[in-house]
Length: 266
Image 1 (cartoon, one colour):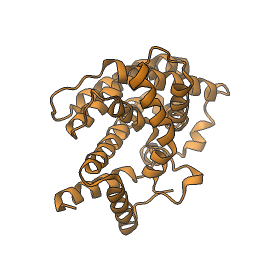
Image 2 (cartoon, one colour; image 1 turned 60 degrees about the horizontal axis):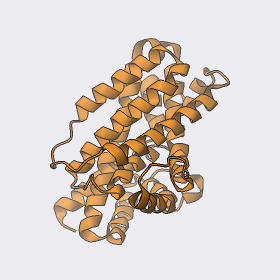
Image 3 (cartoon, helix red, strand yellow; image 1 turned 135 degrees about the vertical axis):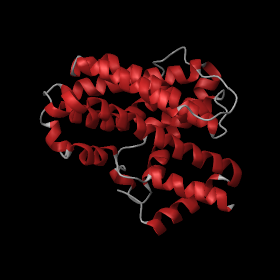
């Protein structure tokens, strides 16, 4: 592998195998997520799950309906961060019930930021496969699935989504997204939402801390957005290198870097 590409892959490994969103929140507010979760009302889990599923469904539709192939350019990270943090702040004003309205909006804004990063790494955003790869980023950022401990966090997620991802891409290519309730699309949405739900739940729990909710809610939203932008940068760096060297070669080098540097997380 070219030395420049190798350094790019090392950077991607560092991002994709970095501490989880929950760990970053602990560093920010000094309170474990488990303790913060106790401050949420009993119905919080159901509200978060419904909002997350809706957000991922809207993201899938937006990805394949509104993205177009544009000239490759540098991503506008701060513009999207400001927009997503702003929408999160407005939704936060209404508390937990506002999540159902705020999260789909924030998620689609983040999707645009992710697409911007994808373009900068040479992705053809006009293709369904690349569009769904953007949505796939929302499955990153949480803990590694327990039954995939033999893989790095990043590849555990990709392998777990592979079948649903491929089926959905084939379906959308042939039929579009006119039927959002098609089983093949619902399977992909459910798989991504199951992992995105974990991170959204951590975000909501952190914002439930009285002092945080009043003083630093914007910081939580910014951390939330930044987490997925960084994941997108790592994800699309890996995909760019896979187009050059092949998926197997890149995966092998990725795993070697993770083992050598000790950044592999569980």
